[in-house]
Image (cartoon, rainbow, N blue to C red; front, top):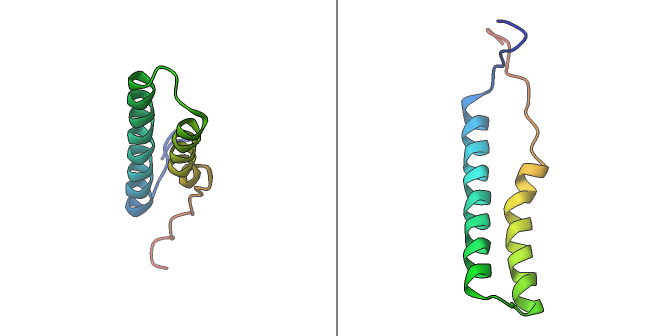
Length: 72
């Protein structure tokens, strides 16, 4: 392998993809909510922010483990 290649365990890559999808959906939801409500109330903004943070936290906390060596 070259220095520009990386080995990632399939399950970790799948979880990353899932978490990115959830975040993308949250962004779409908030975009749609903001477009539908030109002047949202503070409580509505808080709900939107909480949804974005809930979707983003798994990515903030993500750590990849090194794949197991062959034969271990």
